Amino acid sequence: MNSFNVHTKILMGGGLETLAPKLKRAFIVTDSFMASSGKVGYVTAKLEAAGVEYRIFDQVRADPDVGTVSRGVEVIGDFKPDAVIAFGGGSPIDAAKAIVFFAGKTCDMRGCQFIAIPTTSGTGSEVTSFAVITDPEKEVKYPLVEESLLPDLAILDAELTVSVPPSVTADTGIDVFTHAVEALVSTEASDFSDAAAEKAIKLVRRHLLAAYRRPEDMEARQGMHNASCLAGMAFSNSGLGLNHGMAHALGARFHIPHGRANGILLPYVMSFNAGCHESLTPVAKRYAKIARLLGLESSSVRQSALNLIRTARRYVEQLSIPSTIQKAGVSKEEFEAELEGMAEAALADRCTAANPRPCTKEEILQVFQKAYTGKIP
Ligand SMILES: NC(=O)c1ccc[n+]([C@@H]2O[C@H](COP(=O)([O-])OP(=O)(O)OC[C@H]3O[C@@H](n4cnc5c(N)ncnc54)[C@H](O)[C@@H]3O)[C@@H](O)[C@H]2O)c1
Ligand SMILES: [Zn+2]
Image 1 (cartoon, rainbow, N blue to C red):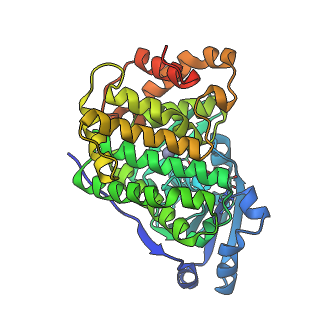
Image 2: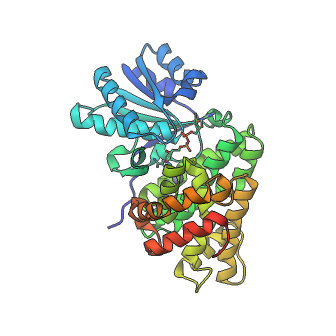
Image 3: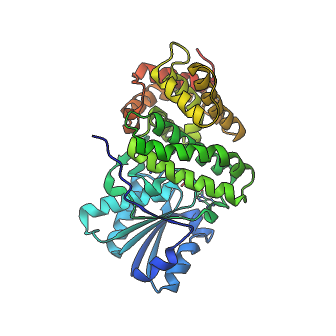
């Protein structure tokens, strides 16, 4: 059975000031940069104006780990909030989701509102039932997937993203593109997830490069913020695919930011899915359909699919994302030592299950090898 769940109410352009008077105790989850740079003032000023008591938990680091989540569970248990406000990129939002989820196992979190305020345009975590938590000892990223993780409210204020530096705009932007592509060809895709993903990918095509080149272009920032949320809505329902499975394995071992890991792998995974180097698979036809949507179609399915893959490659180049794992600074020795483990982790990753082309560990190894040098062995 397929379903489409959009639990989260989306407020566009702001709205915390009208919510705040209804709150008593708010637990803010963010990262140290958002706290120390004063950006969290976006939240605290509105809470203070409404007389809301709050506590800031700012210990989240990129790719939140199990230790941070357990510390958060302890603090939230003492504070007993009636609202959790996740403020930041995907890392603080995911950490907040996991904190609320695990806190709910030991204390009563019923009635506690979950509000997500994204400050990057990338993960769409504000509307997804996913939270990705890293186990640093095992060097594994675990996607926790539960409908109860869906935030109650998401506040989309694109003004917050103006300060995002170009390298983060690039990484998070290619993440949005990957979410939309994977959602559109996933085995669990439906007309409903397609609708959200199609709009997202069109917005990416129109606004990604502008947001990267002109950080203060509000139209572009707004377009990417909406694209990120729409792509999140799509993949939260359709699932993702091999690209995310491999990116989790690669990112967990070599500390490559999530979006960048996706961008590096994307052209290689798409080529595998479409069967570009052997005979075309049915996925090529679906890529051709996406190409048509973006005005990239050609007379043949093969050429249209290749045009889409070439567009992914061109984004990587134009956004100054490394085009291979080697160029991301991973030595041959390190790569070879981790290759087996990465292929196994990617195969076991929950995201891989929705990939439109079934794959074996051997095939994943080959895609990793191609993505290492960019050459076809
Ligand atoms: N839950 C989901 O559905 C989902 C989907 C994809 C990825 N993820 C996870 O999300 C995480 C990545 O999230 P991300 O890409 O948003 O990065 P992030 O949250 O790690 O943030 C990246 C950097 O940008 C900074 N930053 C954030 N907002 C800023 C702003 N407005 N101005 C200046 N700097 C700002 C942060 O301080 C940080 O240094 C990974 O752990 C990934 O696995 C989750
Ligand atoms: Zn992603």
